[in-house]
Length: 426
RNA sequence: GGAGAGGUGGCAGAGUGGUCGAAUGCGCGCGACUGGAAAUCGCGUUAUCGGGGUUAAAUCUCGAUACGAGGGUUCGAAUCCCUCCCUCUCCGCCA
Image 1 (cartoon, rainbow, N blue to C red):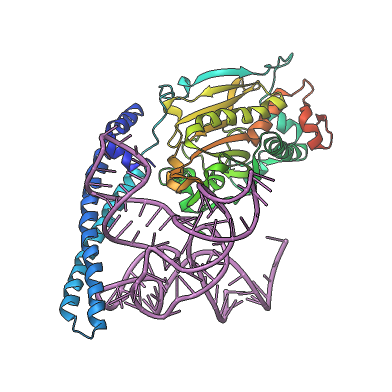
Image 2 (cartoon, rainbow, N blue to C red; image 1 turned 90 degrees about the vertical axis):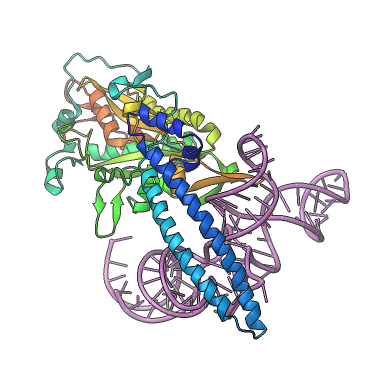
């Protein structure tokens, strides 16, 4: 949610941002017109309420003296009617403004490169050795299926397509990765761990920016009126909704494992095989609530924290700055991490780290204030995958596969997998 | 699911129709005292919206709103009525 004061003060800046995104600028003028009307109504209503308060007090005094106050009461009654009408009109205007504001995207940083789609993303660095094979490396779904550690057909029987099931060493590696990632983030990178709800209400998803525009991307539990979370960013960010945090406590660094649920509407035909694009996947998420002055520095830290997992697993990856067309609704700036998938001969996203500035904080009303005074302001929220577990597992299967079909277990993962060094056919 | 109790400021806790944005205590901030600290004393301590003011911001100033949320009664609601949400206690069921 943008600050309406910014739209009032500098509408051209907001319009420029929308033009950069190739979006319609008319909502800005609509808001300006409604805002003017809103302030008129407030002034009229407040004026009358002030009169009513004054007159009501007089009535009280008259009655105390035992005098008749019926004339005055009648006058105030009429004022009450007028106030009611004004407030009803004001409510409508407020709703109109809110509805427009709710669907205007965040204003991207000037550092975000132009571009229409992911082809314009800019690689900033590449890390790790790309493995050389003396055989033709297979995509992870073949590796996993051949080893009998991923079951792609039975999960479909249970649910629908785009669900998968891990078995044996695959299942073990799934939870090993979760524990490993959480341990690194909590023990080395300074995050506090949470285990949060996997379902969230509409306010929560509005607060983090998924609603109202992206409802079709979510699974919903109609009966309870709750949504399946698409990422732990949702609960870990919204948990501080309507709070005023101590400035001295910032930055707040949270991590947590959750399952993530995505309908993948509009992705029909894309990544239909394997673990890359499924309706349910595990993820360890990183969330930061920061002072507005250092959210960009904290984003750099967060990317390094996400990278540290790939480095320890010795998986080759690259870091991209995401361009305008690929940025999305909420962030002002975003980095992606992509691992190299030798079996598919392409880079695959395994983490996305975003600075959302005060956009979510405004929607969720998350503020901070110094104990030593100063004004209350919105925090900046950041989120990043640290990392997506299924895709990390896929990265291991592809990069650590051997000619005989076995997969070597990355060294750092072995303590989490009962010392297993190689995954053999089960 | 059944029965009951309750939701007031950062926390605890008064307040049952006007003088209550709200006593008191704790906490917190500033100051005094002290070599320093503790204790003590003094002062201060909600947020949002709108107007004025300001180059702008902060400070300031006037007004409005808010005592779980929404609606109602009333000239006037923290206080009375209705609906919803949440919390707690007991019983039942249950991983």
